[in-house]
Amino acid sequence: MGKQFREGMKYSGEATDSAPGSCSSLNTNTITVLKREGQNITYQETFSKATGVAPVQNMEDWGEYITVGNDRFFAYAVEDE
Image (cartoon, rainbow, N blue to C red; front, side, top):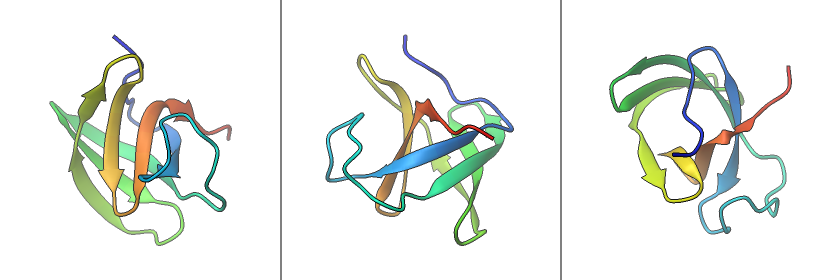
């Protein structure tokens, strides 16, 4: 199994029309995982400061991801603080 989301960690997004792992989008949004309950993530977006809940999905060889608006956030895309 690939990477999994962890509470308190910040993750960078990528446009949903790009290939997983690509760096084709500029000014990508980031989220911070506030809470994980089973297969749901409560997050806060960095740019808008909005909070929300999204279901965790899994992509073979890439691990967990969630989709928020036009961004997809993979658990391997941890932001440096």
